[in-house]
Amino acid sequence: GQSLEQPSEVTAVEGAIVQINCTYQTSGFYGLSWYQQHDGGAPTFLSYNGLDGLEETGRFSSFLSRSDSYGYLLLQELQMKDSASYFCAMRDDKIIFGKGTRLHILP
Amino acid sequence: GAVVSQHPSRVICKSGTSVKIECRSLDFQATTMFWYRQFPKKSLMLMATSNEGSKATYEQGVEKDKFLINHASLTLSTLTVTSAHPEDSSFYICSASRASGSYEQYFGPGTRLTVT
Image (cartoon, rainbow over all chains, first blue to last red; front, side, top):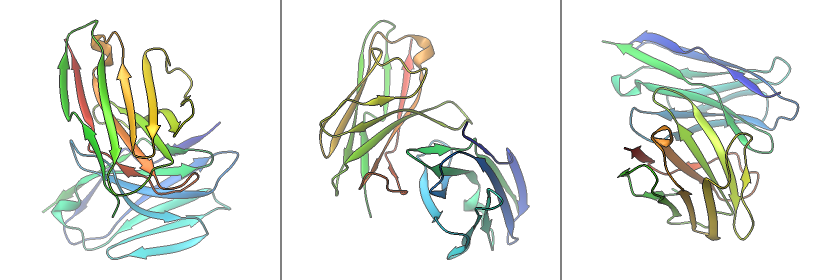
């Protein structure tokens, strides 16, 4: 079957760095995406990894290891506005979302 | 960027009535649109995939006669919740992709449905 596992909650301090891990299981795999969702809002696309390695977009980076069926989202220089839920999602013939990680940021 | 709109943003209806939710891609043609349902503090559950001009593909456990999906054009998909019941109350979100197989989806702002 298909599944994604990510921590339900993570807490970090403003200005720090936080890593949100995601492991997946699927028979067919094309890539791993990350989405951010604030309470009451719609998900917004953050990044995509189709190949192994690190993708950097400003303060956010995402990493993928196909051999380990593992990826992570790295958020640097955390700001209070980064408090949100973060979903990893994998694509085979459709996009399947993980259950989301709620990021709490302490001042 | 790519903009997807949804209408209405909120709707309250009585049990037994039907509700239609529209999803539009405003500045691009969406070959594929997706409909999700999300419960509070939970993940997005894919309900169905709709391709313009063809029947929607429903996920296992989703009643196609209850959740009618129509994708009449490259910019519009509609979800109709028929004979709504309180358990249908949820946040419904659509998304669209520019091309089949695209990894990036653009989400609408969602529709909060409350069935009384």
